Image (tube, rainbow, N blue to C red):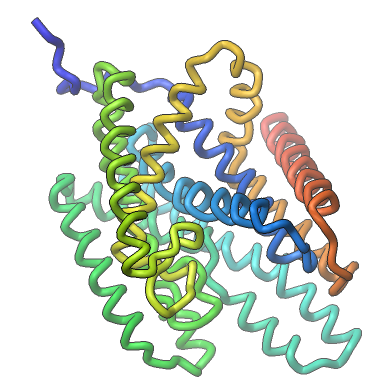
Length: 361
């Protein structure tokens, strides 16, 4: 008798290697794209730039967010109270990080130059909505989900409603000039240029990951599961790519229409990037099963476990490099690669030392 693909019980409860690969590479790609966009004016060949933008786009923040949802399914601390506490800690960490990596540098440059733009920048960046604030809101959201014991179908419906509301608010384009109001509304909608990861724009990905994780943990045959996921997702990517020639969807920068805005994610973005996520995770599952990748897998697994600290540290390095170096002359591929890899190695090493010291206390 053929075995069913999904069990009624949780059977994949250990660490999943493809999840570690996905999360570890996501933080690597995020560091590289941040160095590219923040440190200096790098002049890269078009192919290199496109590859970097793709890795730093669909394969970075969306993968990280989707795997956040998967991680909640696998967490042993899924009580509403513990999820809410973690959410509040991450939410607070967003503003601490903003203050340290952009707030303080802006104050230093303001004192050095007297340029009033840095005064405005201090408030805008310090109270900007980065991925840690989004992660905090996401944990609070899932604390409510666990409290209400919502089913996958109900959760999917909520995600669809959120996506529709987000699109309506975005196309309405109501300006928010008040900084305090913008800082609050920016937590939920892309109302200004400093609301990078507003909840309504990006919530689809952790919800998708949560639902996916609820199947993965019960999967009786992961090989077959990922073959199906790869085939279906490849079809979706092909269809949307073909449609993009007619409707103008840019698969490299994850946006459609006239508004060139990576940080606004609409429904087409959600579907395409979700398909890319499943393609990517299916490939990573195959890679993780090969013995030749065992040692790299252990390294990537460390990145995955230390992802929050690596993310925190890399922004501190990037922010202070900007203060010390300022706007420097353009540089090419070699300088970018060396700079990006160096920032990541320093971030990884600092995270490892910090967590080792923390464990020893």
